[in-house]
Length: 342
Image 1 (cartoon, rainbow, N blue to C red):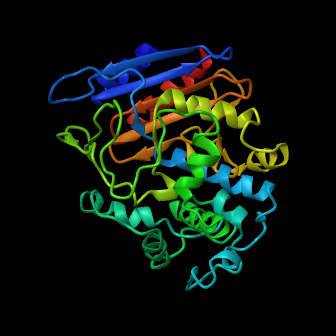
Image 2: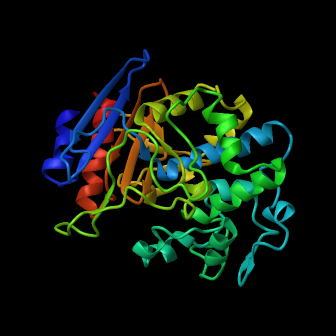
């Protein structure tokens, strides 16, 4: 495992890596590699906080499914039932898109993030309202036919808006009360409005568009562009705790957990081409046989690769930059596979 992390630093030249592997008996091993700050050369803090990125989608999906379990909404309800006239554009109609399709990425909606990524540095410190993000997506052509799987952050922005409509409370508050506090994630939090710095001990996050480019420190950045699709900050150990609690039924009723784990093919989700996607939850095929439950997340300055096996071994690896090419992705996925297969 340490060799895999060292490869990410010495061969791929990532600034730093922080990881935690939770065994089936609950014991956790911690790892670090590289440095936590390129300027000062300080070490990577053990179990330091990172931006979780799209792992936030698992938390948002859990809140939606809890509301389903409480009878407050249905997966077959349409988006328009809760957000009337919001999702309307050429070839797009919220009256035909269900809550299930949002969580499953089968709405066909374009991903607003692709538009924002075209000028990433301009978006780093700009504040976005959730409705702005939806409007950006509606201004783009659909990424796929309605009913076809296609990953889009727009789906989870809308899911967050639905939660707020149903509960009358902010999605960050609902995630905090229903998930973070409930299972005792002490180092995980939803950033406040305008909060750009990471609160606790953390490795700095960096950005380089391709190999050989100089690293830019992007540790402080605006998270509103990710919102219910990717705003959370937390530690590797906390993310392992969350995933274990999820698959063991501590967060959802059996019926809702079963719905979450009903998957469809999503071969583009990882490099194995074998991935399947449920409701805010995906599978990751293992070289040692079988699969694990995963999501993973990319945020400006951080990449998080994480998964839990059906029998309870969990691993989270946080790298302090985004992947720049296929080799980076291969080494990141190999590190996660090694964590779960050894």
